[in-house]
Image 1 (cartoon, rainbow, N blue to C red):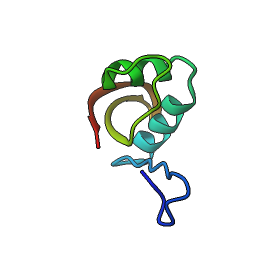
Image 2 (tube, helix red, strand yellow; image 1 turned 90 degrees about the horizontal axis):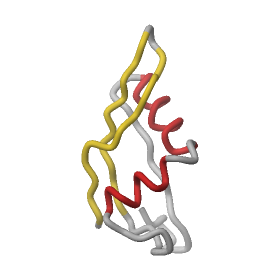
Image 3 (tube, rainbow, N blue to C red; image 1 turned 45 degrees about the vertical axis):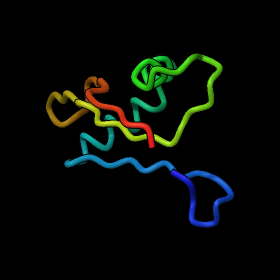
Image 4 (cartoon, rainbow, N blue to C red; image 1 turned 180 degrees about the vertical axis):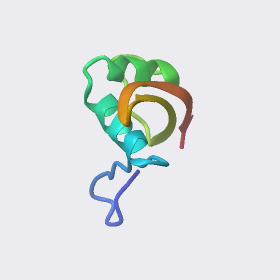
Length: 76
């Protein structure tokens, strides 16, 4: 989302529990995530990313995030 001054953007990440936040952060850092984000938003590989939000399903095992998948996406 745009920052308060309108000079850049802010990325907000949060989960219900620590494992969810960890999984979301790991999802964002994986090289295979950007194509998934673009597909969920129905945008091409060269299109700029719009202001958007996602809901991720994070699967955990013994308190650690194991996988993350996009279950909902919304453009603003």
